[in-house]
Amino acid sequence: MESQYNNFPLLIQTKSIKDRLIIDQTMTDRNMNSDNDFKNRRKYERVFFSPDDNVLAVFTITNQEAPPRSTYLTDLSLGGLYFTIKRTEAPCLAVNDKLILNEIKTAVSFQIKAEIEIVIRRIQDYDFVEHIGYGCEFVNITEEIRETIGQLVDWALKSYAEN
Image (cartoon, rainbow, N blue to C red; front, top):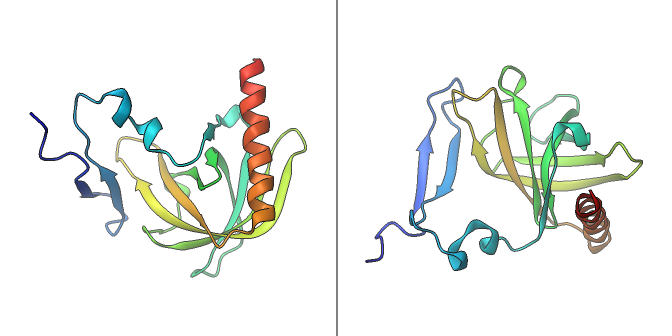
């Protein structure tokens, strides 16, 4: 029997200091099969980073007068990125807020400098976790920047495969 909740959007309001944050999740069947797993739902191949990989993103918040922020990237694909910020340092952001990604830099001299518009599509804010996570989508990205991001993703996937 198929669950009535498959692919039903679930909005969970958090009980933190950022009451307006919403986590956009999709409910899936508890017995996920290989045709319905999260990897197969992804449009682009993604690479995951740990803080030890030292992949940093520098961004500015479009609707706030604040200096650029720097944070570790957790994952990257041609479609977007995911980063976390320590709860005590996190700016007040919400789903659909726009940011400008100014730079991506790595410890091994790979650097992307551009003004890439990104939109927050998902926020993970759990009271028991020290960091808040932000899933962002690239919008209005040039083909040249997309190719450069693709080179970074390919390089990272290749380097992980070799280790």
